Image (cartoon, rainbow, N blue to C red; front, side, top):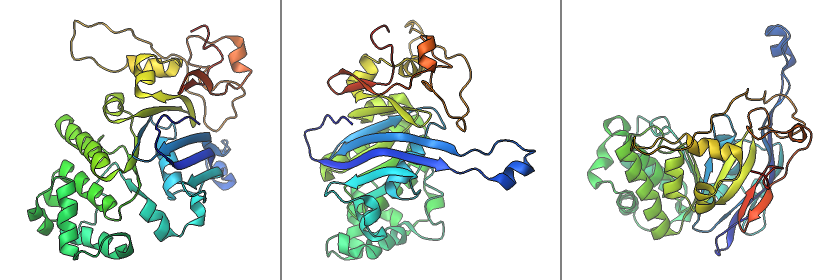
Length: 332
């Protein structure tokens, strides 16, 4: 695990595993097809420092969202540990204690907000439920403060979620997460359902919250441009593993893993006169139910050699905080 920030470590994830078990009866119903357990996370390790924004990127199905849900406690991990800054494992905390330390912002703000509650009531519910976690200000004053932090007018307190735009609803979701003054917020694809102009506003909001409140973020996304804009460090995931990690400059300026290079080459450039090198991935995505003896990316890698299918690569230091999971780093 590598961390660039000089701030104290807030969260440590060590060799986290998540398996979704097979079902024999379901296999019989499917005509005898394999129902082997699906390994969604395979020994993921990371650290988040106080006030740091760590981006997690990768294709759909790589385990990004599962990682966030296991950390926050919405999914029980199958192995490994999630440890808070005081050395206690997260599973040792009560639900109340955990929720005052870590909160989550979901991809679809509308489905995460009770449509029968006004915005004011939604925020009051969070404040009242966790009254020990915030100051003794009257609830209305605390609600106004939260709306101000996320850049929403107080007039929205009497409105229902359906009357708000997508960007406004996401700001309400962020305000509700901040109601208990958490030290870490896991943002799971928080801007993917929003248009480009609103995305920029929400990204700026995350940075403002980090500056004002010192909140750390684990920012899950598949849009590399968004991750580049908001993150201090970046973790690239493929089939449940981190295949490359480093600072934002490491990943976007000197990517070393072939998968990271392929992701970066797929970023569209607005200027048609600028030609960017392409790295088209060929081959088939491995079956996540199957045990892979060698490198999980070997079936799609343009640099593959026979040894890639035989040995399982570890994260190897490239320079400083930069590491990549490839046995051919010296050649590519």
